[in-house]
Image (tube, rainbow, N blue to C red; front, side, top):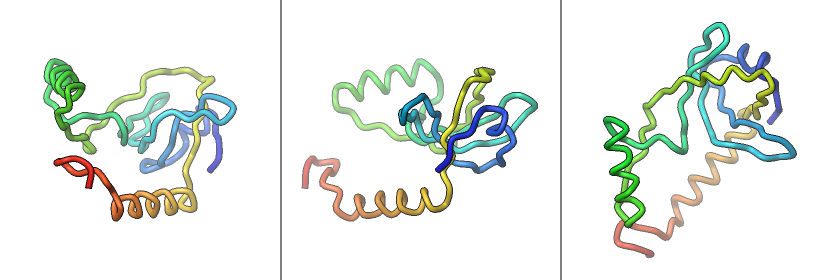
Length: 120
């Protein structure tokens, strides 16, 4: 993993996996970088996109989820960054970072204790 500034981040290719880096080891989110435009880019959020058709439906889904209803991630939803803050920093994941992460998730899936009906 490495930390890069915004100017260097904009040069990275589509498909780069990253988190926003805040400071002193604080990371925010997990994203896949999409197309880069002159001073902006698209991204796919791997942790917070909810499958819905509009903001109203999103709010309804989240309110229901707070009462225990299930919901589904939308892993095909792309957004635009649009922050234009040159002080932003990014943690870039290399394959040597992603492989253990994927393996850890696969291990967790094999032993995952929570089912729709509750705890195994």
